[in-house]
Image (tube, rainbow, N blue to C red; front, side, top):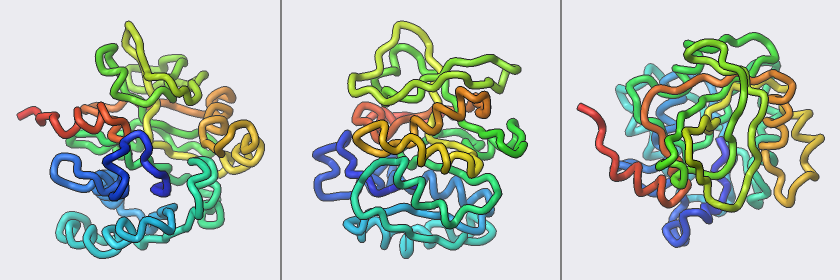
Length: 255
């Protein structure tokens, strides 16, 4: 779980408070993704964190476990890995490599939140299969009027396998301009189940951009036909985007 970024899309809110601690519907943003993975009874959570985010580290170590009491069977071990500078999500992911064995692992972006009875990863693991080398990602249908509330990255194209799964063939890269569309889009969101092949792809793509982003490596997996997208049920928000952050806080859960 990468949390070392500066949160520039939410400036000035993030000038004095880590993005991950900004309130979303009465809880710190990061609460939702941490709670989600704790529900899966994982043994370990690896948090790639900036040395400047001591406040966030204290929340994860001290406050979050209190909020979880009685809600999960046990609390996983938290491993903090320092990312000295925010060199990019690819660099953050690569720093987790020493802790990953020859098993699938979860790659979690805490600035994506889904409101639904079934959390995203549970939906992925129920619908997708953990065949070796076959990666999974959550996919959200984005209506045209919602597009500007999401970051302009991760728009997918592929072959529909059934009503719930898509064999992804193309994944769009990062763009600075706002996401605008006159039609419904399919977007890969920050919930991935990956195999260790991604690390060799990260090494081969780290010099392609100014920052070491994870997108080129994930794009390569898609082009190789090694990524299955699972359509997620629920209402999703990119809360790392100002419009998405405000929309999530204004959202009223259906009764």
